[in-house]
Image (cartoon, rainbow, N blue to C red):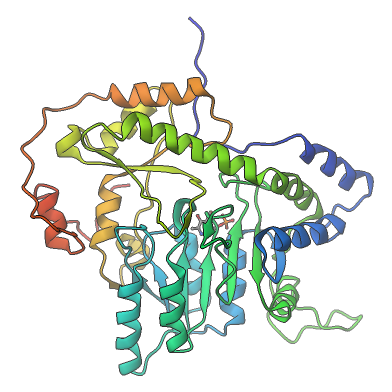
Length: 415
Ligand SMILES: Cc1ncc(COP(=O)(O)O)c(C=O)c1O
């Protein structure tokens, strides 16, 4: 019997050019957090995303931190942030000593609900306590609905930081997410659509802001030969070696998006018709990169929970993962204010990320599908009748539609 290899969620996928570029970096002895590959990667990245300017950094988290710093976020400020995201979207708010306020998703895009944000900004304006900034996340390779989000923020002069860590290669009305707000942050972490093993990029349409961020990212060294510092800085630059990898990876981006969209399409084709299984919708305003293929499992319809499915896949050496646990359910943020929450809780209860690597073979994908369908299932329960025109944004409706699932305890930490 031949040993089957493990299928990973989203492993790095290296092309043919990266090694050549890294060898060039070695040969030229530019093994430093600056150098020609860093400069070229920034130029090429800005050209690809059509951003005004770009700054290569050690991580996406560093990019978000610098953006918040440049926008003057300080203690006693509030910063609004998507609740349905990875913790790195919110942590830098706390690095600046400010308080995150979490905004729920909408059912259509899974991203920040523009109506909920607008209503909360109106309320904050009336209370004379506007947030210093809004961090809007583009989740799992799909852009948030930027136009109404930017319009609501512009009304009150609140700057927007786009967390596009998961959305390189996606589009919003033809443009790259990350390029409309005051700043955009991208990640090249090992699991992302392109990787430098670890790294990030800060973009802005204001080159002066990128230059100011570059200064902060290099320990805020004053222009004097004797190591003088007047401002608190950080050591956040990307190394020339990693930038060489990034340049090679960037050249493959279109192919990577195509491969990930194909994964999604084939999963949806095979599993979408199965009662109780559904997939993250693609919003009409853009094209998702499908960085991860994400599905929802209705336990009553399917006869098993998302966690049952995940464990069954894991037993067969197939790595699937729960969706992000919303920030407002995190013990770390138990004191934070939240606007809404039921929609992201619904996704959290039912969501599952399937293996989504751009090098996934047809055999691998077939193994994922066959194993998933072989998950032991209970007989289907009678569905609760849903009235026509039901939209389900509120907690009670969601619970009724889910057959009366137990309410989520905000302190519950099961995953
Ligand atoms: C939504 C989101 N924001 C921020 C980050 C942080 O990026 P990095 O890991 O490069 O710091 C990630 C990924 O890791 C992410 O998924």
